[in-house]
Image (tube, rainbow over the protein chains, first blue to last red):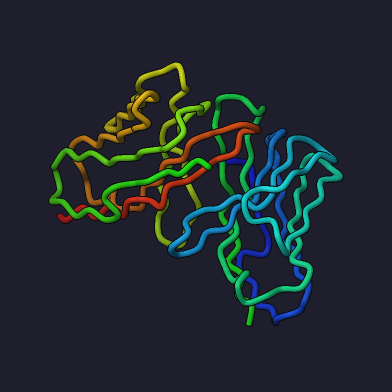
Length: 113
Length: 111
């Protein structure tokens, strides 16, 4: 148990709609991350956060927004969903930003029609 | 830009064999390297983490090595079992604890 939960686990939405994926952690992870996993591209970093109210872009941030008003929550919002955002999204945490490495949530499978 | 490559992309071996999975990276300025396992439709499970100052880590039948100067890591699995079938991912850890992943090796162990 990595102490990271994601909701919903599955989501189908239409092009142009706003959708928010939730990530909640109970281990006091200081660093948190959002990745997407796609065939042919592997896992790519979307956004990350070093602490509450501190966020930064990863490799593929366009079309996404994050916030971290509380340490335990790190929601990812797709402002206007596109079909290219159909993917599996993983939230991850690093307990202290130290050498423990990252722990991953179970993922959210998002389909944009 | 860091690039991580895993070879082979897929591997099928009979049960009981020892095997090696390879991971290479282009920029040796890494903090650590982490190996993960992913079962179909599931999340990632951390297997081993090697700090940049270490050369190897062991956990049960798994042994991971790291050679920063050559940009290589290997994951050795001893006495493979059908339950080891999964996709194995390596990732290098860079600044701000960001991970850069390889595309994975899909491993099948045949009974």
